Image (cartoon, rainbow over all chains, first blue to last red; front, side, top):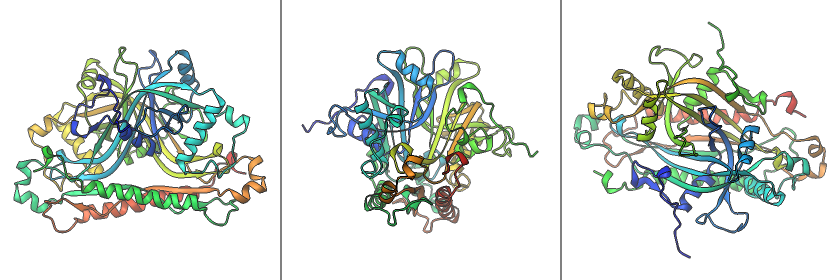
Amino acid sequence: MGRTLTYPKRDINTVKRYAHRATYDVAAIHTIINLSQVLHVSFSPGPEDPFPATIPMIGQMGSFEYPSADLGEPLDCYIHGYVSARMANLARQSEEGLPVCISASKVDGLVLSLTPYNHSYNYRSAILHGYAKLVTDEEEKMWAMKVITDSVVPSRWDNSRTPPDKGELASTSILRVKIVAGSGKIRDGYASDDKKDYQNDELTSRVWTGVVPVYEVLGEPVPNPDNKVAEVPGYIQSYVDGYTKKSKDYALGATKVTLPKEEQH
Amino acid sequence: MGRTLTYPKRDINTVKRYAHRATYDVAAIHTIINLSQVLHVSFSPGPEDPFPATIPMIGQMGSFEYPSADLGEPLDCYIHGYVSARMANLARQSEEGLPVCISASKVDGLVLSLTPYNHSYNYRSAILHGYAKLVTDEEEKMWAMKVITDSVVPSRWDNSRTPPDKGELASTSILRVKIVAGSGKIRDGYASDDKKDYQNDELTSRVWTGVVPVYEVLGEPVPNPDNKVAEVPGYIQSYVDGYTKKSKDYALGATKVTLPKEEQH
């Protein structure tokens, strides 16, 4: 109650640079994962292949055991996408599952300073390390499919043809990742420069500095050629409008954040 | 002349599902990498750590040797970001460099079909495998810094304080990745459903189907509190306007693409 859970700082997930921008706060990290439309999931295929494999997937944090758990609590990451035979075999081979690294990033602004060296992005990124197992329990799989579907458009599950039939259920792969470490990084605020540059009048008189906000928009829904529902339903339209507003507000808000003391001048 | 180069189909980069959406076309893959504001770069830290490490970085395809090479030609991937001591050591240890997997994804639309099973995204994604080495040649490093800076806002290099000084150059890490394999996936078009669902009148009369376009917007530039240039310069404003238009046009265009025959009904 009132606690703020943090992921343990282990060597593998200690953010070493710009420590004031790092976060180990579980709620902050889970929030970044959940708002990302795509997660990049990496694993090592084995000793014969030196290259990690990375697959773009879709996923959400959640707890099947405690479905009402909030984002600040320990959660699993449920992911869906193309699980290759190789990946599935690796996940089955070991008792604890396949070690994976899940990453998500969102750019919120282009930070233009006086010199390229101090250019940056406003951004939010999160990294999770955990062990992935294929979900085999039908009830858990169905629960995860609902959570993931509703992350695309809230209430879509209840407003489409559900439940999936036997064949659909069998050919859908869901991985449950038990998280063992996590970290996040958040950069916001305006551009920052070094003394030698911001005290150079010739330079400041000719170089524009500031932030170009970057945000994602959901456009007006485009009906399918064979769609038979005349109006865009309210649950879709209100999500579209809300998404764009939230995304824009965040990016604009991020430009106005006061920088930490060590970056001010 | 007139050739279309493709990456070789090797086991490690053969896209096994939805083959009609896969591309090995070098120009298409390089284009996806170059338009991505963030690249996810993964490597295996070594036998003592089972988790791949993934770092969000910024990068561009290019050739230092043939700077005028176009996107359809063999290119290196130059990436910049926080290179940890561990990553730098691994890149130095072997003659050929550190094996990395570079991935980039962009969502262009939420594809809402009659049943969650057929939901999808319109998207573009690319994966590259290659060997990363730290760039040590000063001229090459400077060239790469210009290419990467101008990928954030074209002409920004020439319109800010350049060149970087000795100290800035020394503390900037640039990796050159020699690409050995690549693949891409592109999904566009409207929603697709199975016969049992689209012939179900009760279902089609109540479930809206179609695509919600997703695109990235650059907002009005927000000047720094200490910015002294009264007007947003033309090269920034025109990039902002062009970016948003291009991004929106792509997402809207993608909703209208006719599906491949095997997905039509």
